[in-house]
Image 1 (cartoon, rainbow, N blue to C red):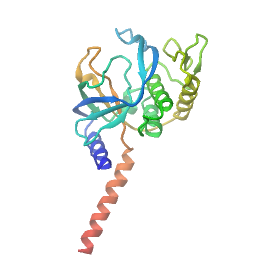
Image 2: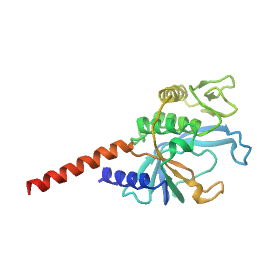
Image 3: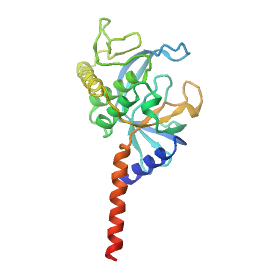
Image 4: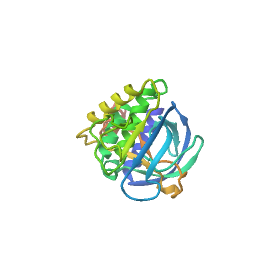
Length: 236
């Protein structure tokens, strides 16, 4: 049943560039605290600063799906809370809406689709990677400890993460480095839930990745389903 619900959402998104819906944040699969500093260079209020946040995988319900999905934030500029419901537009242009959109999609599809409740290090590394890639004013190629004691991809004034005394800090950074390097040159397409439909308030909710299979996977599935139906008709 879960596979069919995912396929349904994918088909709806790929047919239309933007489809209005609602997201409800059911909760977070893990809780790794961090201080994230960012600056997208736009000069827009709220698009720079430091936030005390969680590096976590989200569990949400998106209207139109039959079950909840696990996903990640690609929005450093707004806040979200457990239980919050907000408007979104489902869009299929992740690869072009962000400078590093194809790489975002690659990381989610390869490392972020499963329930990471029991793997907080991987969840943290995926979230750091996606937030780093979501800033359009740089192209991160690695991730490591910088001279200031935080972790960054070489542009600490654009994006850096402080993990405090977390004993897994070096593991998280190493895995983030691995994901950023693995995504280099990716051409993946992808979909996302744009929270701009909820307005401009700081607590409107965050834009999220819509973690669905590649369109080719959907085509293969429906081709198989069609062949199965045809075979059944021939037998009758």
